[in-house]
Image (cartoon, rainbow, N blue to C red; front, side):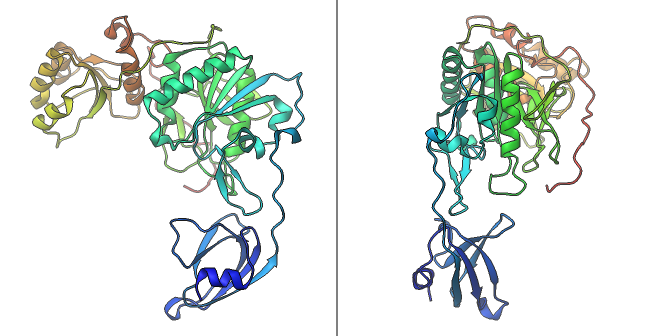
Length: 438
């Protein structure tokens, strides 16, 4: 019996609680399980039935070799999602939540147990009723993108939306963003925005239907910082694998350091400036940032790239990759090195108008091109060392600097938004987590 015939014979619908028994494929042991019948995914096999177990995980069961299905309980009507169902306390400060997509910008359909992208403002706040006791929520769906699809033009769209939010009376702005390129966006908004309050980027490593989801904790903590923080652009994410406070990190010093852990984000060559929960903000090193009229400054030049120094890099291939670039960040080895065989290629590219900067591909530490001759030679032909600036931040800053009327070298070597430090902190970051899955 195929999947559709089995479901129709049992009159089973999405969201029903079912019990499914199978004989097993090729004489293997069958299944006997109970859970919520999930929608059929476009990537699932034609005869696969997906069931959400009580532990929050989904399992796909192939019913090709025969199965029995019975309804344990029919699905209840889904709860309403209308904005009118929430009473807004107009005495509270207003916080704007801008959704760009990603795991955090999704909600659980409690009829089916499915996780769906938020398509309306009501969808965005539906899972977080605590928000209404903290602030007036102005939720906006700006875009629904995987973070790997975010482009420089999207940074400008976000920046303009942030300015509009502050001009409409918001005390702070939260940007819900996918985690993979969240660090790039945080750096971009740091340079292109002047703001009177906090702009907080927040994401989620695990979706809202999982028992270990960090979505609610992160968003509510971000809301607390948006209410009580200082002007600037920040990232708020889990500070440990457990359910302790979130870390607040300067937007130009943050990097995703793990593909799946809840505490994936770390302040590099820096430390968190604060820890925060939905109830309390604790400062570690409060920045002295001044309120400013909200405005967008400059834009981004896309003809910029990163060259990663490695032993197999071929000079001719490097030359081809540099063609047409207006700027390039060299992620050098160690203190800021690139093989001497590439010196002439870089020199010619600089002569043709490409602006070069040097960072280190090491996670921690800073560039010092005066120690070895290869570094001194590169600096002599015009490659600019960027101290302890992150490679990703350097890329974004160079994109922004190339659109400015101020000299590119002056901008790149001047600390503007916390991206450059005179003194690099030791590469120590206490692992506060106690277990948790990787």
